Amino acid sequence: MAKKQFKAESKRLLEMMINSIYTHREVFLRELISNASDAIDKIYYRALTDDNLSFDKDSYFIKVIPDKENRTLKIIDTGIGMTKEELETNLGTIAKSGSLAFKKETEIKDGYDIIGQFGVGFYAAFMVADVVTVISKPLGSEEAYKWESDGAEGYSIETAEKDSVGTEIILKIKENTEDENYDEFIEEYRLKSIIKKYSDFIRYPIKMDVSSRRPKEGSDNEFEDYVEEQVINSMVPIWKKNKSELTDEDYANFYAEKRYGFDKPIKHIHISVDGTIRYNAILYIPEKTPYDFYSKEFEKGLELYSNGVLIMDKCADLLPDHFSFVKGMVDSEDLSLNISREMLQHDRQLKLISKNINKKIKSELQSLINNDREKYEEFYKSFGRQLKYGVYSEFGANKEVLQDLIMFYSSKEKKLVTLDEYVSRMPEEQKYIYYASGDSIERIDKLPQAEFVSEKGYEILYFTEDIDEFAIKMLMTYKEKEFKSISSGDLGIEGEDNKDDSETEVNESKEIFDYMKNILADKVKDVRISKRLKSHPVCLATEGDISIEMEKILAAMPDNQNIKADKVLEINKNHEVFESLKEAFKNDKEKLELYTKLLYNQALLIEGLPIQDPVEFTNDICKIMV
Image (tube, rainbow, N blue to C red):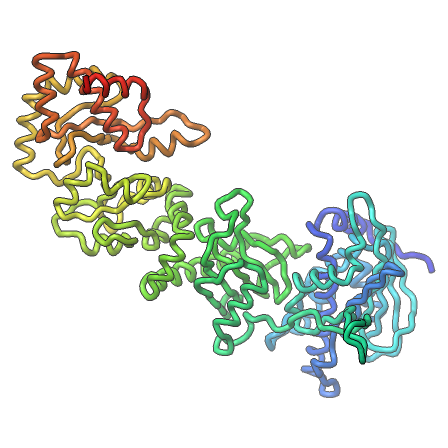
């Protein structure tokens, strides 16, 4: 029989689709199974309006049959079938969708929906097959027809023999090449994995004849091979079940089955929305960070389904970076998909789902803080860093969302506290939220700068991660309270007596400090009497936006631009060291230079900063000793 030609535009589209539209060749099976499911759905809808037609769901199925010997793969359905005209219209004109036309005609309701709408998915078969044959017998007809094509050159239609209503698609699988292994599409285990991945929740059973082994009857040592028909797919997705039917174990099992992680999730979130846009979602907050979570290799995103069919493994657009630890899936029948079903149109529906999901995640995390603090702290140890990155990133665009979720170690409580908890117990006269930065809690505990603030009875938040201070700088205030480092130049808590003493001491000691500043040259911005030291002789304070801790972090970065904090060397006027400085200034300027360099290096060590010349430092110590 002479071939019929595809229309010119259809031919070009077919060539493009085969070579570039689909990212993974394996999706051809998803497309053909989705079309088969549509065909069965059409009988269901027909039965709703035809009293002479009944629909027994158990009588309908899809079957996948690989044949290694003949190098073919069959996909058989018991659906509505196609007439000769429908074969011509639906398969002869690319991007003509019979499912879309059917959907418009019937105004589908009753909880079912047609999966395929664009008609291109069928042609994904040509990515793996040299020849595609379709044999179909429509409902209510005695005639069957065969459509066959070897690709863009055209197709033929002729009468055929078929006993039952439905459609049989036969793919002649391509031979292997150096770059492509087509054998996998006639391998039983591989076909099963593709079905489970993409079509596990198709509502009709997908059957395969599966090879198995069993002991021979009457023998404990001998085995025989046999073939049994198995249903590969689960059919009823967990997210479409009533929440009241499901247990925590059901959600945990789903987490494990989908391989979202090897830990146990701290919390699951089951969302069912039936409004402007309909969708279901099951989300998980994991217990442990994946091994690659803080690496470039980590891919965020939720599984995205359209009416039970997997469209994307990881839809990154559904999650912002600060919630990238969330695992799970979203299923919606309202999403606008393009012809490949792989690429979403970035439309209002997707943005609305994302917005609602993120609100729900924030709400659930807040609920954990209030109602299950132990679990939240467990989560926070794994993912708190990511929340703080979220505060800092995108120029603070998400700081209002995240500020109530971040926590820091408290000098008073000796545990993690929220910013709200800190502010709620601030004394009335306290102006600032005080914090201290350092490598560890133990190191911050020993900082000289903390003495004065602690003596006032004020709580200090400990910043021990490199992101902490950057995040707070972006946050700037919380509940109208400004953040203040205990190393900043002005703590805002100087008493009147202390103020008077400081002015007197500054006037008396100005010459000494000017001399010391000249000795240190450009290493410090100033030398002055300290308003914060109690028992320690010396410390470093900072002025400006860059703190000492930020300087250390920036110095460790690959593109180090040598950004320095504006350091101020502060001297405790009530310490014996100050008397030694005054004595040396009067009688021995060389000794004052030695003392100045030692005090500066001592202050550097306290802050965890490197000494520029360790040999000189040790020599200076020896001079003191002798």
